[in-house]
Every structure is written in C-alpha cells, then in structure tokens.
Image 1 (tube, rainbow over the protein chains, first blue to last red):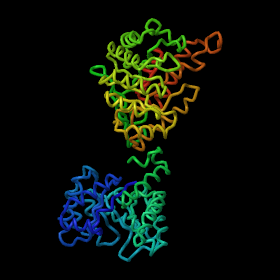
Image 2: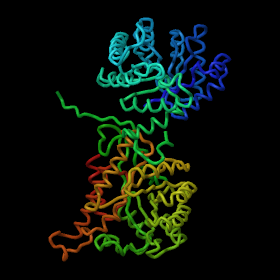
Image 3: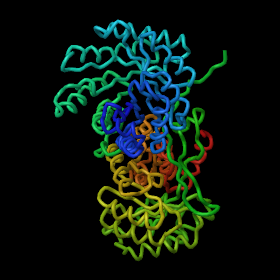
Image 4: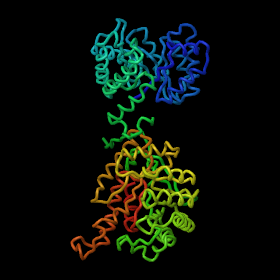
Length: 261
Length: 313
C-alpha cells in the first residue's frame, strides 16, 4: 500500500512558517524523514494559497524533489497553483497526483489538468450538496466522477477515489460507512478502482494519545478491504502497513520484517 | 485468429552474479521471469553447473561416482585440473570436507593451502565450501577466504550460527557469499536480512535454502525454492532476489537408490545408470524450482542437465 506523507501541510505551524519565509531547511528535513520512514509519495499542502500560489507550489515541488526521489501529491484548491506545480514536477521518480477533484463543477477543471499533464488525480466523493450520507451515496458520486474523468480523457486507472474520512469524535457512524465505501468503489470497475483516504482525519479532535491508536487500527481495517493509498504520517503508519501486508500474504514473513522497507 | 499465449508480468528481478576472473568468468541469474518462461521476459543467463571436488579422497562417495575421478581424486589439484581440462567444467566447487572434526579434522591452514594450490592450477571460477560444521567452518572459511582474496570466488556456507565471522571474511577478501538456512523460507529471508544489515551487498549474495534428493524430501526443497522465487518476482521482495544454489550431489549420492548394488537390488537395474539418473532428475526438478547454480558430481548427469537446459532455454 502506498503511504503519501502528510507532514508537509500548511496547517502545521513549523511548515507554514518555513513556507512563508521560503526556508528550505525544515521542508527538506521533513520530506527526507518521511521518505526514509516509508512514504512513496509526499503531499505538498499549501492550503487555498490565493496570493502567489503558483510560485509557492513551484517552490515546494522544487524544494522537496531536490532531496527526495519521489513523486508529489499537489494539494490545494488553487487551480493555477496545481498547474504551476505540474509544469515543473520531476516525473523521473513517478507521476504526480492532484489533490483533488470532486463532483462539484468548480473542481472539474482539475480533471482537465490531469489529462493535460498526464497526472494522476484524487476524486473526493462529495458534490455541491454537502457531505454524503452513507456508502451508497459515496459510490453514486464516485460513479459520476468516473464518468466525468472519462469525459475529460483521464484513464480510470489514474483516478483514486476518496470516500472522505470524517472525525470519529463527531461522526462515529461514518467510520464504518467509509470502510464499506472502499469496498464498493473497487466494484465499480474491472480492474478495481484505486482508493485513497486522508487517514488522520478519523482522529481529528481526539486526545493526542488516542490518535495513533485510532489511525492505525482504522488503517488496518481499510487495508483489509483493499485500500490502495493513504495520506498519513509514515512514521506512525509504516508498522501497520508492513504488518497488514504480512498478514494478508503480500509480503513474506521474516523476524526482521519491520526493519526493511 | 492466431493463438496468443497469455503472459504474466513480474515486478521483480533476480540479481545477476558474476564469478571468476578475466575470460573465464561466468554470470548467472538476472532473469525477471519464472524458470524457462523466457517468452515472458528476460533470461539473460543459463544456470551454471559446478563440478564438485573435495580436499580429501572421496572414500565416502559410492563407487559409481568415484570411478570417473579414480586417477585424480587422491589430490584436489589434479582433480581440479581434470575437471577443467578433460571435463570442460565451467565452474568447480571445492568442498573442504576433510576439515570436519569427525573426519580428518584438517586445520584451517591446511584448508587454505588446498585453496591456494587449486587456484594456482585453474582459471575457472571456484566455489569454496566448508564442511557444514558451523563452528569449524567459522575458522576454516576465514582462512580459505584469505587464500582466495580478489579471485572473485564464492565462499560458504554462512549459517545462522556463524554468519557474522564468515561475512566479515567474504567482505574483506572481496568474495561472493552463500547464505544457508535449513528448509525454512522465513529463516532464509531472515538470514538474508541479517547479512545485508551487516553491510554485505545483497547483490553479492547467493541463497541456499538447502537441498534434498529425489524421494527424500525433494518436494520440500522445491516448495521453498518456488516460494522464494515468487516472492522475488511477483512481490518484488528484494531480500529474496539473490540467485539460488542447489548443492545436490552430496544429498543424491547418499540415498539408497544411488548406493545399493545390483546384487542387492537386481530389479532396479544398472546401479551406475540409476545413480546418474537420480542425480539428473533431482537436478532437473531444482532447475524448474528456480536454481541458478548447481553443484553436482557425476559427469554424465551434468552432461544430461546441460542438454536439458539447452533444449528448454
């Protein structure tokens, strides 16, 4: 399973400050640390970035790829910033992932970018009408996004469906609905559709000591249902990913299995 | 419509390993497909067969496999020369069985001298094997490794009980290394991990999951080897991507079917032919399971195997 390192997000104060000051040090340090811990892709979340988003995204892509041989997940609602990032992304280490489109017409332009720059893209299964009520509604929205992707010329194997993980502290019933959605998404196509979650949202708002526990147990259930990728903290998630891979027979067991990538 | 064979694609690849020096070096491994599936991908090298010789006369070998070597086998140097010049061996495996405490208990210094002497008369790649006595091998193989410094030999076998010492010797003398575990796929992986964690380059490693003879647990060896290869190719498991060795002669020529004479077992037919077939059939099974390097004894069994490989690849 692919871990997309979540730590380079504007929400974190240290990252935000480094972004504002264009200080490469902390950004590169966090990127390298996530790569070494097992991330296969690095999320670059610059927020809405209404002013100077293009330049900021390009600075992030360059800064990260200077030190880490991985593709990036370009995470912003700013269309121009995504395009600016795609233009200079180094595809030698893999194709980038746009985060994200959805069933909201304002976000369809992201599909156009994915087709134009041969990028992968996350399809968040929400529409204009607010949060989906259950797994069935998520799957219905997913089918619409798939149709839209086909219309824009994005191959379905490049689309990662995201069921939108909600906070367990406020929306407990959605935890199971999301697991069910992961299963249903795969059935929408043959070969199965790819899936992705923003994992740590499940424990958002919970006491700090509970967060890794919730994140990791939730991840193991999602992996059992066939999850393709998770935006997560690789330091925290790697042991779970490796262990579930062993339990599911995807990796051959050896006593030191946790020590190898 | 013409028939199009379905093709598998694999995510991993077996490392290729080169042994020997100058014009006589040989390379094995390097494929990214299951054995003999060359129509699906790359099979750049054929498996290599090494002729087994030993440091003391092979009095423990059955008569029928002693016979081809009867004029040379009292001296490892002339034995090695015979394999190279008369039998046209592509590689030689020297087993230092005489160092075993229950045998002649030869010293590490004696073993090192044998290695030096053999290396001075051959230009073929050499595989240096201990007596499989974990404790004694730790000192014997260190001395033997020094004697083979920079000759690009393979040395082994490193086991769980002695791998630290032997790795250090293989690294210091720039040799390739065999890692052996006893018919346990998870331990095979674990040992490869431990060895690479000590800084040994995984591309210089050869896995020995341990052999067995036809009729004596060959199916266990087969399953372990097959699973190792599947992990390497379909799961891209880098710890399982070194080539595998099948050290089979020593197992084959110990079983009843290769030992029993014609007077005891008249219904089994010619004892000599039976032994050769037993070795050739065991080796063929291992080729199909995925070995890239074989150690064998009888020249006729080796010739038969080379023919099989030529026809299948």
